[in-house]
Image (spheres, rainbow, N blue to C red):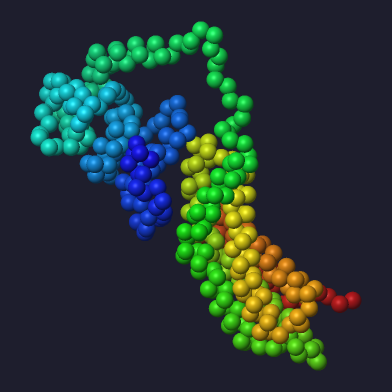
Length: 356
């Protein structure tokens, strides 16, 4: 965080590009930092400073080797105070113009390497490979590459640096922070559940206490059916954008070897449990069950709560599954609409069970 100067933003939300959260240059610096976290033996970068301002480009240069297009090294060495070593090296190349006073060294190096290579035909990779700096670097690499007497090759008994439970705890903590700060998703569900519960409770007021006719039973069953199905389908569609955004982060972090897919998926499933429980209690128990007028018996109360809670769990996990399978939010919406229609049709209310 200190290397890419993101310490002041360590509690910030990454957000969506062009919508909220970090700016373009902050996102690029964060991406570089995430990739360096896994300590890769080699890293390929295509124009790492493109789209950055002069200050952000200087920060990235300080963290990485300066590379030309195609991955060829043109300078590997210390920058020095105010990039004095870097400036001295490039000013010593014939045909390269001197840097102006107060000019940003990062922007200057990018400009002179591009213009000089095109106009003067200078190959900075060849210049670097014929330099004394290159020979010193190679000698240092050779010296450091030789193993100490009695040393052994590196061996990692497991694929990941931490055991599964530690991975799960880290992913669960990350999901907790992400959900807690995602007010557009988590805070939206509870007021929406309360509003829907009050709406259905007022529409089906005291239907549960009327049981003299067969139609009264059907009315009470319809009230339970529509309230549970409607909130379940809403959960399916509301969780999809969240998982689609999280999925992008997951692919990058998994490729960096930070955790296994099972630990991440389990944490993503567990973090939904308390939020869905609060949604069930707020909507199903305190409003719908009471306003519709069902009998206040412990067995019936907990059966209703059990069915509604696991119904919301099923619909929410179903939305997560569709995003994971389709990897496309639009396709997931289409598939979900079709399958939800089939579920609603054959749930046992629209088409009742045959009586023999």
